[in-house]
Image (cartoon, rainbow, N blue to C red; front, side, top):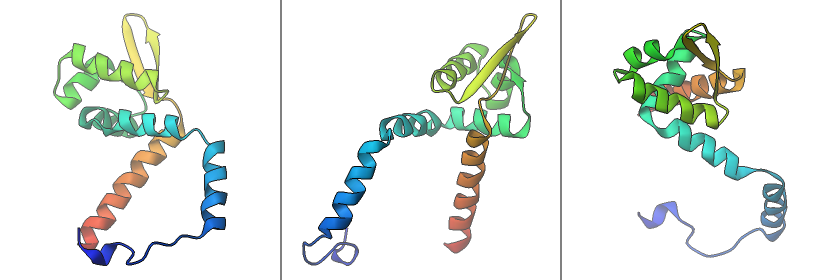
Length: 122
């Protein structure tokens, strides 16, 4: 890291820092971190993307989409379910998964748009 991307002297805006610290204490940042950790796995990100494309997929569909075994897909889906990212319902012998809410889809689409914008500017 070069010196051009850091402050050359140490100083800070005490009022601004204290205000942000107070606001930060009101938020559950730990759960946000856990959400992003769950999405950080490439296979889980692929699953989220697939569910953005088609509102509901069975475990077998997911396994074929990500190129894994049904057991591996099921493991990833359980992880996503525990984090409140996906929900499932049973239909006979099928377990069908969908995104838990529209915010997850928005996160994925915004992230992809950001990545495409960064690529275009490089």
